[in-house]
Length: 166
Image 1 (cartoon, rainbow, N blue to C red):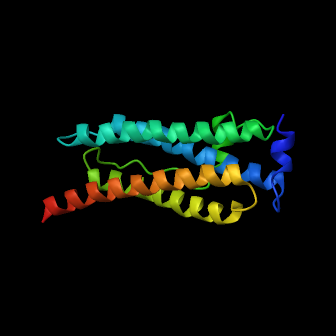
Image 2 (tube, rainbow, N blue to C red):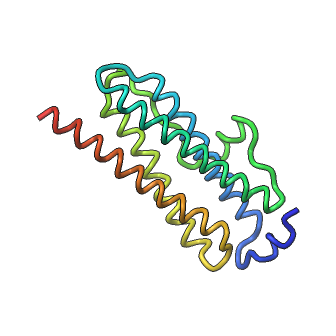
């Protein structure tokens, strides 16, 4: 499995590609899980609006993890399969659960941390894999575009909540 797929990678060791894929896979799984937990935990007047967006984005993050998993498998490896492994490989880490379940700004700021971490990471990986591993490069490029869209969505929500306070 993955013999020719490995051969077309140039200028970077397959172990390094897998390490980067494992890390992004873990980050997407963590985001999927935490967005889902945030959606379940929110309370208050606007919780339903934010919950819908969080559940949608949670599923988007899961789809990102699936794309990355397919690439890992194409290269003859197995994606991390335990929570322990996922936590070991995550680069963006876990978000903090707000103490107040109606503190939408705090929820959004935590979500923005995750989105911005992903943007920085995918941007760096795109630069790293361009002309070295076209398939991995294209996956990271597609995911970067999604994360940028997500950041814009959450910035818009945050702006709306800050305007209400003034």
